Image (cartoon, rainbow, N blue to C red; front, side, top):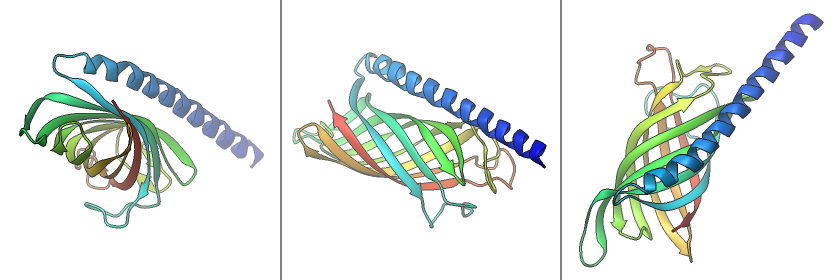
Length: 201
């Protein structure tokens, strides 16, 4: 029995080391990728921030097998395709990049998302309604009883963002993650309610 406990402890240590490596690489990618994308023609960095959230009880598809939490850093870019009136209201295209951690039942994994979408609101982003669809990458695919099936997942988000005071803003996101059955019908997705605090440029 002690030998089994030692092996389990070693496995947990290895998993934590892999997660730390993924988190470090994800944060590095976020720091380097966002400014690079923002330098593209007519593409600019709108905001950076942090988010935190928890799994909800009204999922799209199957109910999650357990409770989840997610924490991440985000970079929010304005893409060149937009349609705004003289009043400043209209529709713009956006790209959201995130890197962070998802945890449940003592298991923690790295998660990154890449989500293009549209924004309905003001051009400078003081008030906006958001929706997007993209992809996510997970370093861990099993959390306790829940099996995501594989590291590649699809993401759908909808949310609202508002300016608070000065460059600071806040937002709410509903985020759905699933494999769309590409790994089989037994895998389960994840729905999260997330709160954002951001700094607008």
